[in-house]
Structure formats: structure tokens, C-alpha cells
Length: 419
Image 1 (cartoon, rainbow, N blue to C red):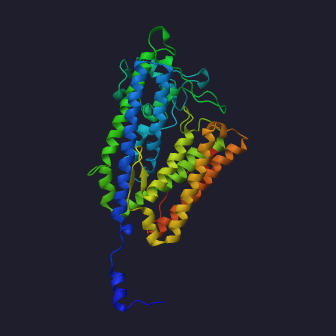
Image 2 (cartoon, rainbow, N blue to C red):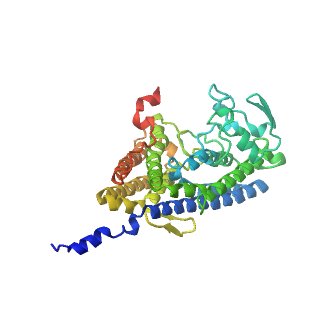
């Protein structure tokens, strides 16, 4: 073995850390990926808005199909931004406006008789705003003659402080485009007809003009909410400035988002809980049968952040010094294990996605006794749990205080799910 001279050794020890171990550079990459992800979400939401305008102006099977396709396209970049939740208060305080679920769809529009009516938990579960120009809400008479973004955001969303009163965001729009999925564990998504937006005698479902007003207002609101969040990650934006202002807190935010989304939110609340309850309503995108894509792109978002690389909707790539490189500088074995676990998770989510696209819908996978479906979902759950353990080891390798990731009874206390 060739030994370094004292001078060479001193020079090596005093040399600055390589760029890949620079915390500030890693945080800048993280903020750049957030900015690009929210910009892509905004671009695709504007495309959705154009498709919605076309549908309302000229309802047909073709314009409805185009609006649905635009909605599905818009979900892919947005789901990749969910990794910025949990660790960034500015995102958590805002996220419920655009992605809250599940929702009591009877608040918004007509529903099947099997849906029922008001419940002890939600007096407004079947309010049907589209059918009622005036109604009483928490003792106040509401004039809903005009369905506006302000009415949805300031009056209806989480009305009476009930979380399932979701009046805005992707899932309200999804319900208006697809309608209820009444197939249970059978094949097929919601089947709202284009004539639900027609005028005159061609109108089905009643109140077609107001349904179009609601859809346009909800989409306009989604665009404006995404414009606001995209701005927070630009240069001098509040979210970017917060992340960059304290390097250790910034790294904590990255890891908190990765671990909490992987474990409690995705593996627990969005996946294992549905398997335990065998409930097709426990789908994230339950009206459109798009849940497999939501799960896949959530997982991809975690991998993006760790590897410091995001592929935009136009095919360009935003990349830079990564958290992976920072962890590798501290403990190469931990980094290798976490990268392998992230890859394994994406493989499992990819299999689930492929199966759904091949005709085995997610709600079919949730049926009691469906061994193949349970295997597909639980293999992904197990992979997500395993990668979370590697994320915990990365926290330790970086010398960060232990982080309490979001949990889920379905993972931490399964018996409580049935209490």
C-alpha cells in the first residue's frame, strides 16, 4: 500500500468536500424539482381547463373523453409533487384545496339511491349544490345562484368543518367528469354521460347548465391554486426560501416527506387499509379507476427527490446534486441499499400499474378473496415499508435527529381499524 506523505495527507484532509456533498446544492436541486413539478402540474391543469371549456361549450362523447384524458394526464406530474408534503408546512396547509379525499360526492351533485342521505357525521352528505340555488349551511342561508370559485373555496369546501365535504380540487373535478363508480368490485369506472352537460331537452341528470358552471369553476380554482404554489418554489418564493434558509431543517424536510409519504400515507392509508377493508371506495382515484397511476407516480416522486432528477412533461430533465450523493459520502452502503429499495418499490408499483392497464382494475384487486390482487398490492406495500426503513438509516447516516414519519393504524395497530 502506498502511504501518503504528511504534506499530502494534510492537503487531502483540508480539501473542501466535493460538490456532491454540499448540502446547499442538494437543497437547491430539491427546490428546483419542486418548482418544475408544480409548473408541470399547472401546465397540465391549464390543458384540462381548455378541455373542460370545450366540453361545456359542446358536450359530446368526444369532448368528454378528451376532458377525461386531460384529467388523467394532469395527475401524473401532480402526484410526483406529493413528496413535498409532510416536511413543508406551506405545502401541507395548501394541499387539501387540490387533493383532498375521500369526498361525499352527494354534496356536489346527484347520486344513486344506494348512496343514502345525510349522516350523523355529515349533515350535508347529500346536499346536491348543483340542484339547489339556495340552501342552508350551518344556520346560514346561502345564495348559490351563481356557482363561482369563491363559493366553492370559501363556503362549500370542508363545510361545517367536515373533511369529507370536498368541493374543490382534482377529485371534485374527477367526480363531475366520471360520475359515481357503481361497479363495486366489478370492472368499469364511472359512466357519466356527456348529456349531463347538454342544454335543453337533451340534458340528463337535471341542471346541466349548473353542472357545467361547477365544473368550470372547480377547474379555474385548481389552476389558480397551482399558480400560487408554483410561485412559492420560484426564486425568492416562500417555500424555496424556507428550505434554503436552514440546511439541516431543509434536509429534515426532504427526508420527512420521503418517509411519511412512503409509509403512513401510501403504504398505509392508501393501500393496506383498502386491502384490510376490501372496500373499493378506498381508492385514491375511485371515480376514474386511475388509482394505479396515482400510486405509481407517488412512488416515482420519492425516487426523484432522492436521486435529484425529475423528467418533465416535455421530456426535459431537471437534475443536480442529490441527497443520494450526500448519503453516499456519509455511508455508501446505506445509499446503495436505499437506491436498491427505491428501485424495487418502483418495480412492484410498475407491476401493479401494468396489471391495471391490462384490464385488472384496482377495485377488482381489493375484492375479498382475490389472492392475485392482494399479492399485487401487498407486495408494493411491503416494498414501501422496506424503503422507509432504509430512509430511516439515511437519517441516521446524515446525523439528523430521528424523524417521526406519518403512521397508519393499518400498519401500526391493525386491530384499531375494525374498532
